Structures are given as structure tokens and as C-alpha cells.
Image 1 (cartoon, one colour):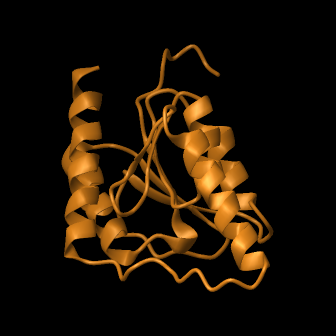
Image 2: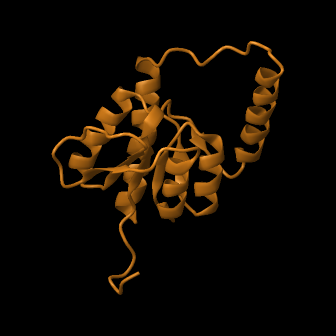
Length: 158
């Protein structure tokens, strides 16, 4: 780290599975709030021309994008991910984490979420059909935007 003092909080996006409408909300927020948004994926991503938005392409492979985010996200940052183990890692680093549906991960509920995730993985591994998530809709988009606005408001007060 250089002697520039603490860096401004920024947003990290686990972008491989992030819905397009959430990315659009983030792109608009980056400009409006002048906050850095970095999309991390193992594929090339199209981003709008902006000094606040960038894409970081990582090598393909299991958890490579998650590792890149976990290594970089720190106190005050926001991580957008559906990946519960990644959320757990970044919470341990002092970052905040939400999923694209606007659900906030907390240190109080992350262990329970990990247990449920592992249990569902075991059921699927045993051949039980568990179904997938509901389609991403307007309510999810609004919940995400509300959580993002809350984080931006807290960031502005720092």
C-alpha cells in the first residue's frame, strides 16, 4: 500500500452469474455516486465507458473469480454475489455483502446460510430435485436498489 491513506470504499461484483438489470443499476450508481465498481468474471464483459466502472477478467477455473474478489475486498467495500462461501470470506475481511436480489449477508446469519447451502448440496448430490430460484423480477430489482442506496448513504457519511 502506498502512503495515500485509506482508499475509498468500492463495489466488487461476482459478475459471472449477476443478472443484467443489477449490472445496469450498478453502472448508473457508479456515475451518480462516483464510486468504483469492478466486475470480476472469467469471461470478457462489456462495460459502459466510465472512469468508475471496470471489468477484471480472471482465468477460468473453480473459485478463481471468488478468490480474486476475496483478496481485494476490504473494510467498507460492498460485494455483490450469490455465492455464500464468498460472502462469508468478504464479511471476515470487513466488507459488506448482498446478493442480486437485495438480501444482505451478515456475520449473524452467514453460518446458518452456509449450513443450509451445504445441506441443499447434499440433497442434490443424493438425487433429490430441490428446484431453482424463482425468476428474477421487479421486486428483486427494487430490493437490490434499496440495499445499494443504503450502502451508498453509509459510504457518504464516512
